[in-house]
Length: 76
Image 1 (cartoon, rainbow, N blue to C red):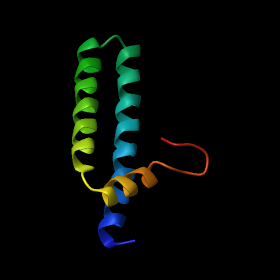
Image 2 (tube, rainbow, N blue to C red):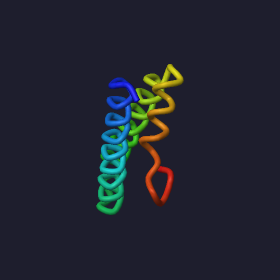
Image 3 (cartoon, rainbow, N blue to C red):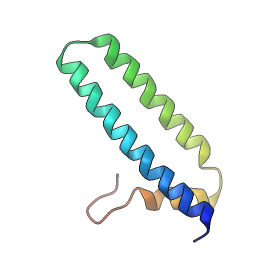
């Protein structure tokens, strides 16, 4: 794999971690009844997802991204 592919894979992994944390924080906000925070976090998640999608313009980037979503047990 090229260095670009490795970098895309690393970024994909970091994005997954970021999105999982955002979803966790959203659940905490929902449990505490903070609907404004729930909405802001939803907007953040949508923005990160849109940016992530915009970065997947080449076959190599898309392939590396998909590989970053795989582990031994599941697809993220």
